[in-house]
Length: 342
Image (cartoon, rainbow, N blue to C red; front, side):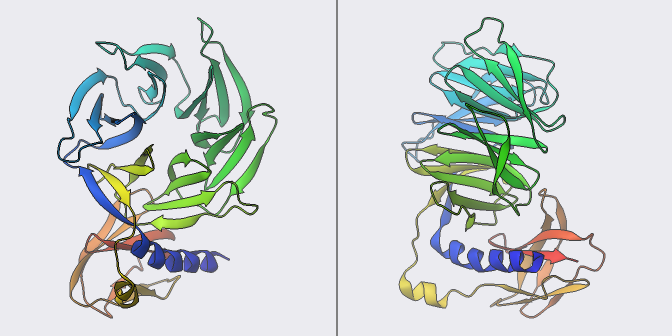
């Protein structure tokens, strides 16, 4: 079953790399960790500060830093003029009025048990604690911001709302919970790896799964996640402006935009995918499909560089000393292909 799963990824990846590509919008940033959009402004967390860029004119990003300062901003969402964010290593949730002349964080919850995910609907703010496994609700209409515990799940982190359902990233899967009847969760998508972020646009759920961006149609009778593009630089943030998807690539210190296909039919026929054999492997992987000597990197699913070097077509890379698990082989900082060390 696991071998079938990886084989599917390799097939979909070959297609999606042809169908989609990325354009770097802003580079040289300081580890953009999470993003959210309001109108044509894209807000991002860079270390301990909130920054923004404008999205209408790629030649004039109007980068603004130091909008508000907080420790370790790790997740945020925007509703109206209010930006809600988790910060201080998951111990606090604050609200910032983006329309104010001098936006200042106002704490609405403190002493939290490693808050990880956040989402807002109406007067209710939902947050998750991966540490204690609970989903919580805060009443934003209350001056005391009353909080209640809704449900226990399996290591919940990132959250997204679609209609009356709260979608939850938890331990290699996406589940959902009814906001009107939060009695239990049901599986939506399983077999994922390390979920870094969720965002919903229309009926489509986008999932940053390791270095791979996946998409699932929530209106389908049978929901599956297909690969959109891979080889991302630790995609820690996803946000839409109009119909364009922006991605915060934390390891690459940049914001990228997903763009539609630009290859011709003849290019589609001649573009050769890189192939890894055997999958899974116990001692080595052999690389074919290279037209010239290129650099390679091997990453684990948390974005840590494990190994790098130079490789030619049909060369072997020794992986005997790697721990068992899923890895990503990146060729020339472009094409990325997963493999399993068994």
